[in-house]
Length: 156
Length: 306
Image (cartoon, rainbow over all chains, first blue to last red; front, side, top):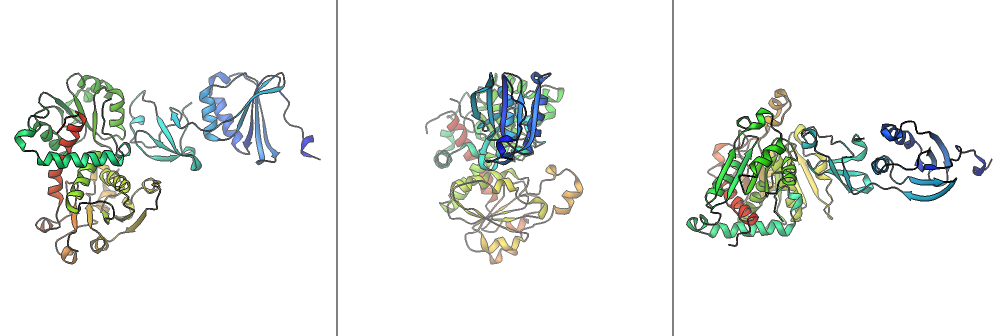
């Protein structure tokens, strides 16, 4: 059977498709969507381990909601940089972007250092700078510790 | 735009060279002339953590420039101990002063203060993170002794994990293209990996050893540090390593001429008193340079032409 004939998850009339998710990352993106209160009662379908020429295997998420918040998109870009977000209208792709982590990550991640002022001063927003995109490394603007993005818990 | 001194990361090589040059000029100005340079200015000295040298040298620096000082030497004497937030303390103090000097046990506090205050803020130590004025005075001491920085061989000894003076100085030395360091520490106090990951555009070599004797024939500068009891989560771990290294005059008998021993002070047992009278001891002169460098920093912040 050729790849083209594999049944993908059903098309949606209108909403958002997150595509080109490296296999395994889809679950982590679902966790982000689940934490967003605006996603309550929104129908979401999730496909795992589809064949992909580019990635070998990929996950895909279809969301029947017209948009995602900028914060949610930023969180997605942190857990799985390079995924494609497509906007769908009347079954057609009307917009398509590949998401990359922002240079400055404001209040998106919690600092791991218990001695950091962001862990000790109520209301102070965290700020990380993406200092090494190739290695997914960020530096806390306050305590100046260097972390891998995947070490840090998201602030949703 | 106000000038803050928060982290060595913020300072370019040119900025650092400017401070070093200013310190050299300040040192040549007679005391009675220096006394007129900051008349009428008030420095808020906010020490949420104990300090002797840094606090006293900042305060002496300000008084000897003709300025005045308000502040506190420990958190217990402030409204913070009554539950006042840090930001409220800063906003209150900025009504009474022209510059804020802050030491705090939490990392990033000086940066936070600089963000919320309209006054210039100087970091006098934030947890285990940065201590930029110590670094600048260390560099000034090095320049005074060697007339250069690039190409020097520097051994850091002791607590390389928690010592912010080591962390700050190491990063600054790399800006001067120093590309090889000897690191002498017990296993549990090794330099954190994140400090070795810095991409300077040239390879940097770290020679790690547990023997202080290895540093003596190697180095132009031995930078000793205290094992800091207050940074340890429990006393047992501190007791295991507290006397790991002790430099004495006998060990320095074979030292190369020109070797200098630096220490940010206070010392406990890591340098024996018999080293004080050797030509290698530079730590008290280093402490004296602290006052000069802090005057240079204050004058730079207030844009006083000298």
